[in-house]
Amino acid sequence: MPHASGFRPTPLLPLLALAACGAASAQVHRCVAADGSIAFTDRRCQDIGAVERLPPAAAADGNRLRRNACPRHLQDLVYELTTAIDNNDVNRLAGLYQWTGLSTRSGYALMQRLEAIARRPLVDIVPVYPGAAAADDYFAQTTVRRTPVGLRLEQTLANGSTPSHTVLELRRAFGCWWVRL
Image (cartoon, rainbow, N blue to C red):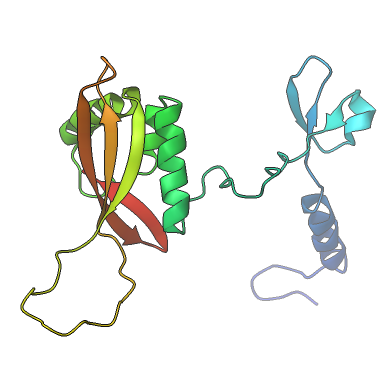
């Protein structure tokens, strides 16, 4: 029976839809060949003489952050700062910085400052707490655990004896700890 639009339903249409779904669900394999090259294929890696690429092994101590993960705890941030500076890794240090609101020009200037920080030997990282309460309180107050507002990097200059101090502000955003100069 013809339709007004000239379109006539066909009984094969549901079968075509199922065939399209089956083709779309094919799994893509990431394979590594013997020479180290990476190939993406819908066939098994063994079929092309390669092996399936495994995810990176987790750190033995379990304390290392996943790559591209932000420090969710203050101690993780301190660890990442220490590692970045000890390895002279300005890119890792820059990954801990909260870049929000910086222009391109400011970003380049900041990278130069971060590079200088990454080059200097690290002596210590000291927490900076908000100003103390008024000293006129005679009676002892209950000790309250406070969160630091910054971190002071204790470093030495290239000569190894001249001290250098840099205070980084601490910022919390999206459940992560970040630093700012």
